[in-house]
Length: 548
Image (cartoon, rainbow, N blue to C red):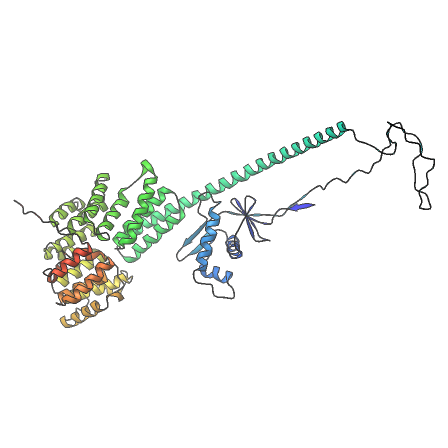
């Protein structure tokens, strides 16, 4: 009888039987449904290649529409099964816009046969007893049985000459010899298996280490691309940075890479105003950093967490504490100092905020992010002329910087310059839709060549904007908060209160600034306005002592 090795592929510690469509982990069958095995076969047919979801669905369901979410479920189950024997290395990578690919090295294995030896046939021997004499009976020609000589009479105490007996000592010796042979064969088998198994495990370990090193290099490259893209101020650069950081998270599961990628992603999301998602990323970065022990770098995730505590959690005390911890770790950390500045701003301490911002404005340098922070503070403190001049300089240098345009729009609206506010809001919509410097409308608006609408047309545009805020594409300025500003300036107190209540319920970032925003000055005398802010947890203003 012969036993044949399965024909298929080796995937690290796995073996895939292509003929029977079965997956084995070190000789043990892995229970997987047929659909998941077909999906694995597709990945094996294209090792390390990106396969789009549409192609996977066509191959798996050639004559039917795939159920909604079924491909994602199959991928999750297959990834969970492969992770069991992957030794912590990523198995299947998924990237938005590119598809999926198998990360485990694939090696084809052939077919071989090992001839086994069957049981030895029994010996046909009938020896005669030693010392016996006389003829032996033979069958007669006629079919009968006729003795050649008459049988001898039985002698008491004497064995018959016609049968052979095995002595007990001979039987014991044979059994011991057979047992010794079995022991020798078993020892040889286990020695060969240990040597071959150790070699296979060493080879699998080397392949896994090489694959992990490649993934770490790829993750480092994605991190470098993300950091470079995050330095831009336009929507495309920020979205590219987010994509690169997410790719780095999937490529390298190590705590050092996870901490760096989660922290960088959290800070980009803070700049984009996505505070709830930034909070989750900051907490994940802190968890990964703590796992590093003495190598932990907590400043980056703590700075992002401080912003989320202020604008999503509306807890100025916790935000100030986190920001001070960041500055205790790194006195020059820009994100931590900006978080402390905004904690002072929300509580109405504008002089302290400007003083904290001073170290970020060295002579001869111009940071649009810091300059926009200063413009907001000047606007909140009533110094609108200085704020307008500073923000105008920012948008001239960086025409795609959406935060500066949002500040200018709020400032124009609070001063009842409706045409300028309508133009800034229109430009903000264009930028939120993904416009670049090459866009004709961006060039016209940045150069001041856009024709300003008259007062009635501007009022109509603003009213339409306030009536349908959810159609706007932007996330930099909360849609409901912007509608509340417009209604407040038009004297529609009830509509303004309703819009602000929606903004507070959605936890829009700008709604936290309602106590200090001059655009809401017409509502500050209302007790309902103050009660609504108190109920929503908006931080109260801190009384500022006059200078002696």
